Amino acid sequence: MDVFAPSSASEIIEGRTPKAVEVRGWVARKHTVGGLIFVLVRDGTGFVQVSVRKGSADAAYDAAKGATKESAVVARGEVRDDRRAPGGKEVSASEFTIVAPAESWPITRTAVKSSSFLFDKRHLSIRGPKAIAAMRIREEVIGAAFDYFRQNGFHLISAPTFVQAAVEGGSTLFSVDYFGKKASLSQSAQFYEEAALPALQKVWIFQPAFRAEKSKTAKHLTEFWMIEAEQAFAEQADNMRVQEELLSMMVERVLANRQTDLKTLGRKLKQPGIPFARISYDEARSIAESKGFGFEWGDDLPTEAERAVSQTQDAPFFITDYPLTARSFYHMTYPDRPNVTKSADLIAPEGVGELATGGQRIHEYAQLMERISSQDLPTESFAWYLELRKFGMPPHSGFGIGVERTTRWIAGLKHIRSASLFPRTLSRISP
Ligand code: 4AD
Ligand code: MG
Image (cartoon, rainbow, N blue to C red):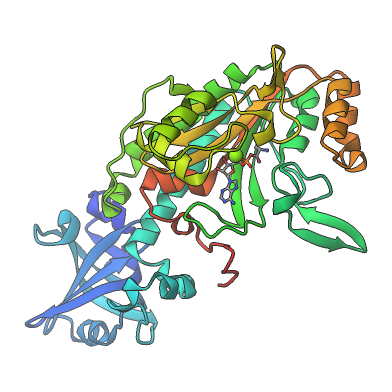
């Protein structure tokens, strides 16, 4: 009896297996040439071609013949070099079993052209090569964050998703009835990070954030994953350094480990140099105006203005010093410019736009109290956030970077929903 070593497609292609292997996966493609059936098997690590010859293994041949697209199969046989096979290797099977058959695959060549159909069938369409490539790049982006923060002494914390204080304003809150009390889903874990600073000094978080975004755009989800970081004794300049190092490391990892996936997506990605360019809000406003997308000083950059400024750059960059009116209440302002905040957005080039927002927070009680009252915000729901300022809160800064927006830019995806396994948007809550 032969011993067949269970082996992954990538191990086989890279020649890291014994000669006799067992492949477990799904039928991605199949074609027949004369008395030979070629089955391209997908197994989560990649693709490997399995061939079954009529006459030499009849039972295997009959099984392979009946294997429909997306059936789960197990094949056993010998690895051979074959220049014509994808990856240059082929498993010549002596055994072939259908473990779970698939009905006629609904994602046909014409269906692929309708993105709404593809997302209605997302539970199936995620098996497609582009969806897989996007998910693997997203994983690499997240993995880089784990490594970056660990290497740099940030502690990973978790925070609740049922909350009462709105971090980023009332207009995008999802309300929840919490046993008769009014609560909402968290827009950002920033306040909890700030609370954790005196305990841990440098913290980061990786969890879902919720925004009732009424806008139907290529960059808005209603539920997305956010990476946030916060440091005590840190100014906005320190905060921007963390952001550029983090994003650079994400790109570096994707370039090092996800070349095949970038190729599948047709993405040409370049390693950005550090430091990133810094453009002030005022400069960005002039650039936007010169491109025909002028806006009032004090407004946040309208989407078209942001896109126009982003198109003038070929690497990620910061837009700094936003007016207070375009920012949330907790932002610190310059002593000599009370209406300008120590904050920045990290912007992706190529028209993609905002990836992260960060800034320095007000750390003094009286100042924060005054800001909350001057903006007519409900003092009660910010009581504990305010109280932090009574117990040793030093200058501190932090930011939040959207995982799907970052993946969208790095992977070169047209729409943010392709960076999410099961996207939630204004018009989609299923599958
Ligand atoms: O710019 P935002 O709203 O900033 C904050 O929430 C801060 N409290 C973060 C902090 O300082 N700790 O959100 C941060 C990032 C955005 O830059 C964007 O990448 C992403 O979260 N984001 C969204 N991604 C997808 N869909 C949406 N609707 C998003 N809203 C924000
Ligand atoms: Mg923002």
